[in-house]
Length: 195
Length: 83
Image (cartoon, rainbow over all chains, first blue to last red; front, side, top):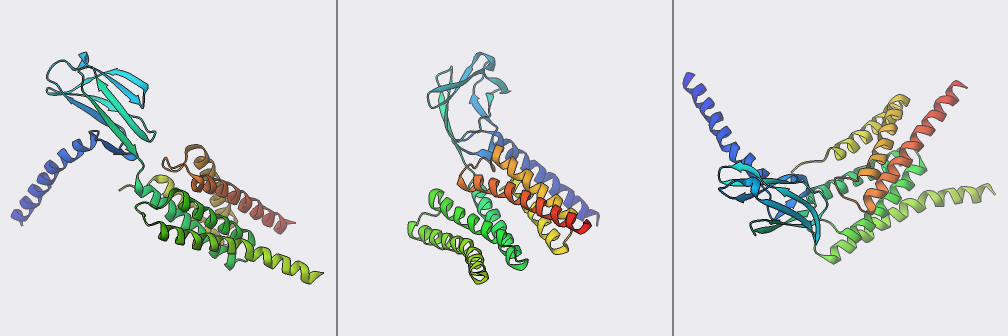
C-alpha cells in the first residue's frame, strides 16, 4: 500500500517536471502563430545588458512600436508581441537581427462557427414546424442561404475540392430558398382561397 | 484546441430558448431572448473570435431580430392573458 502511494506521488512529481518546459515553450513566438496564442514572447540570445537593445515592430512598412528589450535570462532577452490583427508582422533588433511573425486565424473557430450556425438553423426549423411559427422557418431559410453564400466566399477549413464545395453550397442554398418560399406559398394559397 | 466562450454562450442561450418553448414558460423565454439580443449586439461590435464575415454579421442581425421578436410576441401573449 505504502509502495503504491510512493509510486503515485513520484509519478505526479515526474509529470509536473515534464509539464514545466511545455508551459514555457508556449510563450515563445514562432514564425506562424494562431490568434489565440497571442500574446507571445520574442526572444533573442544575448549575454550582455538587454536594455541596450531596441526592437521595432512593423506591419508591412508601417512602424507600430519601438521598444527596449527586457532581461529574460542571463543568456537571452525578451519583448512581448501583442498585436491581434491578422497578417504578417516583422521585427528588427538594433543588433541587426530580424524576423517575421505571421498571425493566422484558428481553423477550429471556423468549424465552431459553422457548427453553431447549423445548431441555430435546426432549432429554428424544429421550433418553426413544431409550433407552426412561419417566421422561424423563414429566418432559418435566410440563415441557410447565408451559410451557403459564406461557404462559397470563404470556403471551409481544409476543403480544397471546388466541385464538392460548390455542390454543398447549391444544396444548402436550395434548402434555404425552399424554407423561405414554402411559408410564403402557404400564405398566398390561403389568401387566394379566402377570395 | 480551445472553444471560444462566445460559442458556449450562443449554445446556452438557444438551449434556454428550447427549454422555454418546451415548457411554454414566459420568464425563461424572456431571459433567453434577452441573452440572444445581447449576443447579437456583442457580435456586431466584437465579432466572433476575430472572424468577421457575412455569416457572423448576418448571425448578429438574426440574433437581434429574433430576440426582439420573441420578447415582443411573448409579452403580447402575456398581456392578452391579463386582458
